[in-house]
Image (cartoon, rainbow, N blue to C red):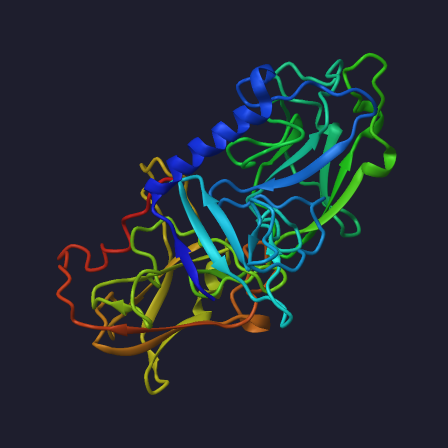
Amino acid sequence: MRISRSSPHEYPTLTLGVLLHLFLLCGAGCGPVGQDPEPTGPLRILHIVFLDQKRGLNPDLLNNQPGRACSSIEPCLPPLQCGQLVFNYPSNGSLLTVDVPDPPTGDICHDPENILEVEPSVDSVIRVAFDQHIDLTGLELPDGNLDPALFTLTTTTDPPIPIPGVVRYDRSGSPDFSSDPNAFPYGPAIVFDPAEPLAPATEYRITLDTPRLRSRSVGGSAIPASQGTHRFTTEPLRVLDYLRCPAANGGGCANVSEFYFAFPDPEGLDPPEVAPNQALAFQFTADVLPETLDRVRVEDADGNLVPARATPLILDPDSECPPAPARIIYVVPVDASGQPSTWNPGSYRLLVAGGASGAQARDGGARAVGDHRVDFTVTDIGTEVDEGDPFAIGVNVLVCP
């Protein structure tokens, strides 16, 4: 799988082009966010998008058709890519291009907004977008949010477990066109912000109060009752990195680490080279139980266990970034007394066990999918050592998204 990341300096040019395209499509009649003239007729749901702006993911539950075959002779329609998934990074304005496995018959058009290729992340905000504005009479609360009964989210277990969150109305966006749901979201929409991250590998049910959702046009009708219930399953618990990040069908997904130094380094050597005083940093798709981090280990070239410790990255309480308990993990070697040490030069393998004995999600549910292995080499490349913290490089450089 080949993955490349564009320079952040390339993105403003792309964004300017997209804005120009929006202007040409809209003409003088569009508002500042490209709102088209409002249609009339029955209210319809156009998109159910799961927005994770940190990772640049936005799969659409209603976008669920397999991609068609493509080639240089039969290209994909923009913005779809032939043989590749392309993700936007809103936090730094860069792009991530992932080559994904295709059928033996040839490449297909890959759409990062297709629910078949990219599963909803546990950090998703759910947007149910309509083809026209909703009549909000009697639906708004004094705080400006909507009656929570309009949109409920539960597990599909028996009995179902309700998921707390805030329901609000978003007037922005165009029902017919969106260049990037992160920056120019589909809309108008009912948005559900879960109070806590969802659980990985879990099926949920969306229920809409269809009789109360009516268009605001004269004589507007409610959406059909058949559109009131939808199901989806969140992505499994797994390790995210640049080398192995499968989506639902074996495709790719974006790396979410916000480290300047990320392990393995996508621009580095294969296997990547690590300095004796560098920690190994990786991230799970969801928070894990810290007591199951003993499933993370390091082996030398002969398969011998190397004393090391896997620890959640706990941010400074005074940091502007919110804490991320037991999701971002760093691994350091330890000496006989259990204190942080340094790597000896040589070849190693980081191994994160999955399956029935693997790392487990914080809610005690899903286990990590499959074993995750990454080979790396430690070389004495002269990296400066901080006497106060030999692992300052790669540990204390977290950037707020």
